[in-house]
Image (tube, rainbow, N blue to C red; front, side):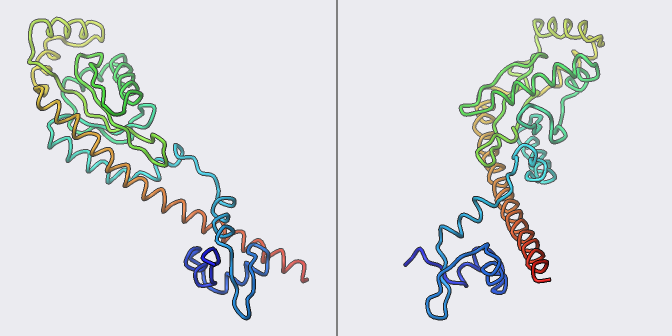
Length: 258
């Protein structure tokens, strides 16, 4: 008998009033068994309302609705400041969803050229494609480090939290030569670029381990926030969908009666 639900239990599951339950019985959206003066409903039928009549949602299309980007921007800024690196949240293909936190002057100069911006976007796309656990760290086209962790909603990688724009060693002659080549390729001032590179955050091995340990934990927290919002949005859509069906059924019954 545990598979049979009372009217009150169905009300609680569907979040509707008693009158709506009786209306759904009348127009055929619900079927039940009347025992004496009491209605009973099979649990499987109630579950099927959510499975069969729910509108299909596309997680990627809804990512901007599901993810509270204002909240994410704030958390990203605080986290980046605490750990001393730049950070950005991108979608699954590397397109930025947030504004970069604490971008280095070196990277801003690189991005001032069209070729530099294209190369930086390619790095973000690569970081998004490599995001996972354990987190792979790689060197970007400009010689700085980049690492990412996925934000997952409904089992789909919806976004990626990326920490980047940091070096693993102080500026040396070899690095200056590399920067000279970058300046020549992008039509930038080499002296200004080298000066900006000297300001770039340098993380030792212990600090790098801290980043790789911290990043998935933060991404997991953001995944939980996004999942809670996705579940709420899905429930609201199902309720709205059923309410629309009820309105349409009532209209059809009225038309038949007339």
